[in-house]
Image 1 (spheres, helix red, strand yellow):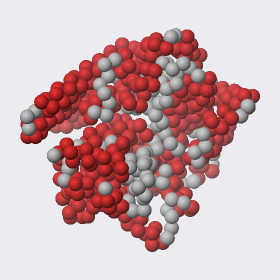
Image 2 (cartoon, rainbow over the protein chains, first blue to last red):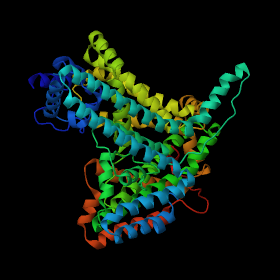
Image 3 (cartoon, rainbow over the protein chains, first blue to last red):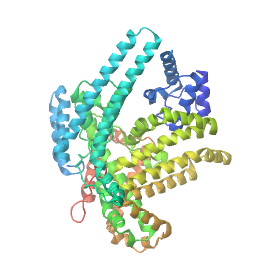
Image 4 (cartoon, rainbow over the protein chains, first blue to last red):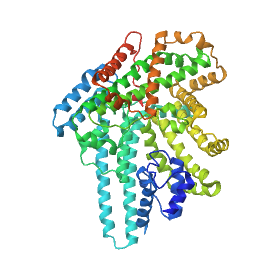
Length: 77
Length: 528
């Protein structure tokens, strides 16, 4: 989770990723930020995020992203 | 029949609402479905067959996808080892993707053939002229609303493939999602998950929903009939006879068209959302005070929101995360860093989005130009963003507030007006000529010598338009400050509330631009 927060803070400094739950719906992460974020997550956690997973529900909070990463890691194992 | 004509308010909507209210809950969705098909028949007659075909085909494809997904589950569960599971997943994923591509290709193919064949033939003939070959021009009649329901159909089938919605076994519910009468002509483009259940719930008409819906409808009518239709003659005159005017009047004409388009389209959305609300259905918002945007990319998150969101979810992200785009992005990030590297794949996707956006709006070069114009503006904005952010940080200035914020709003408004000039012009060549006149022949002389009053607007028209735009502006400021006007009005006593509603209806009736010297303008987005 800490690795994920480091990635997020690099992309959007100054956002409280512990509490924020509307990163997409609140336009805090725009489309370019999402591209960077997905590339970084894929590199860091050695997973592939399929297009079907790129929905606001999975990216609205750090918690939701972490759950998605765990699920995809289990799928790949 | 349109959403702005008396037959909709005096006959169609009251009849639909009455039958809906008196029928038992289970029958209500079918009253809406029957009403929607009658509405579609009234606007498109026998072309209704296209929406029927679309509905049946996505219903079938959805169930087919569901079957593949069930088979996949069972096969993966029964697989002996990890390798076999992986191989099976791949096979079933491929099968689903092929089915999705096939279904989307059929729907977009129908739209393309019906809408773009004459344009394609016209341009092919220009090239083929060199070798003395000509294709006979053909033109197909397309049902009104095809561009809207096709996107809804593609979104449904893609969402089933993605697993974000379950395939609907009930074809009646799916049919209602596809053709609900308040939205079938001009949108908003809803997702299955947003409206299908609400539509099928058959909720009884509530007094609160009825009044809120009626208020929203009257506001929409005010925008369309009092403001948009009043500007129609002036806009038409300027765009048709631009060679008679100086750059100042042409710019004013483009600004007037931008206001007309906003009032027309957002007015239609108010009527769609208001009509939906009467039946207890919350359709997605399509506008969020777009003229308060501080950049073009922000503008497109506030203007025709459901179209922008559709392109984001079904074009931008799939292209951004395609294999080729990922490779491009990875190489770019290594060479140019995180931001500019991501921009490479983002730009490729952005180009596809604006190409599709331009084409979706119509089969003419000016629409393609309109799309590319916005692509260039957003691309430039993305490119300059890190530099500008740093600059403002160094100057210790908040660019979203104060005078800088206001200047950014004005700059965005100007860029939007120029874009709309190309959107409205009668051919790209004429659009470029108009733009050239604005740049080289700008003058305020035409505005001060009363040219406007000889171009389709009289003194009273100007006053009504300015007062109307002022009223819409005040309401927009309140909405921007999260003031729920309907709720606030609902807190007042019944005399004030109904007084406001009746006063607004009276304003539409007395100030509306209809009859006599006014030519009613067709709903602008119904043709797209």
